[in-house]
Image (cartoon, rainbow, N blue to C red):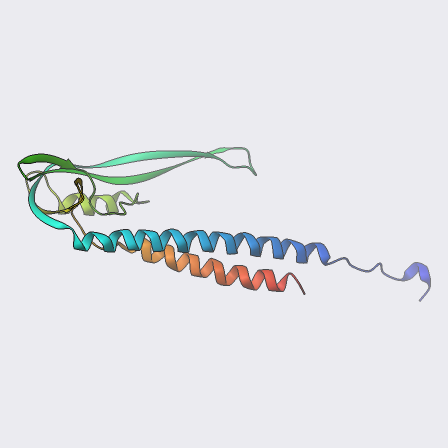
Amino acid sequence: MSDEEQEAPVDVSSDGGKLTTLGVFLLIGGVVLIVSGIVAFARGDQAQDWNVVDGRIISSEVVRHTKVRNDTFSGHEEASNRYRAEVVYEYTHDGRRFTGDRVSRSDPEYPLQSQAEEVVDRYPVGKDVEVHYDPGDPGTAVLEIGTNRSVGVQLGLGALCLGLGSLLAIAGRF
């Protein structure tokens, strides 16, 4: 084979750099998801020690929020709908009337309207409910204590991002 017929060497260092960069971004995203999930879990767990009083649902409805974002690749705007259960209740503590609008400490927005409707169906207008309020701040209250499934999903996604990010960062170095 002559010098002219020899193939030029392939530079794979840029692909490794891309993998390492992607891995680092996934690692950072995983850490953010896990830390915020732990905070949400702790907040939900904290409400278990709150005082309980009787209350009543005064409004309950599903509200749609439309989020618009620009797709940086295509330049087009993309709209997506999210749904939230807006439940308002009243309760009395030491002779003072309060209203609350938190079902739980981590009220999520749902991608499906039916998910928000499930929450609203549990709390129809006029229903008597137990209200858990913060003894240090009686105006802060929730209907449900503990955490919801979204916190578990968030922690799982965070762990997945950490694992995948670690693999990509290591693979990019070889």
